[in-house]
Image 1 (spheres, helix red, strand yellow):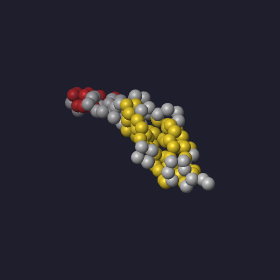
Image 2 (tube, one colour):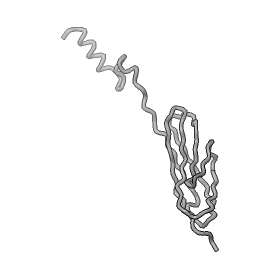
Image 3 (cartoon, rainbow, N blue to C red):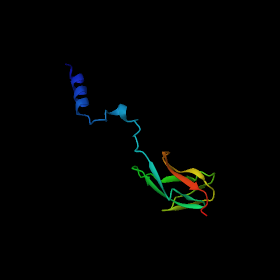
Image 4 (cartoon, one colour):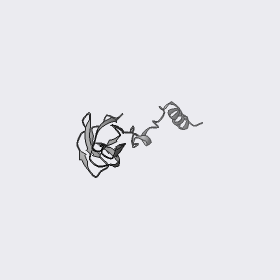
Length: 123
């Protein structure tokens, strides 16, 4: 076996897994997923129903969050960093799906959802 081939083979065998040298330098690292969980309480009751939304945002990359958007399922929405509890009053009976969409500065997005059922006013 020629010496040059033996050296190249040895270099490949000794390389760290996932690091094959110069040809691997342009690879883009895969980032962990951004996740959003949106819990709501209470999720049902008579109108008018005030609901507390409790978001949990997990980013294994630790990237700053660039944008937050709450959509409450009734046509209203708000933007800005969520606080520990975001309150929303639903004045009319109906079924609503609320969501919180988060966008990290590096472009990753995630959305969490919560369902709300508002019944007729209590007598």
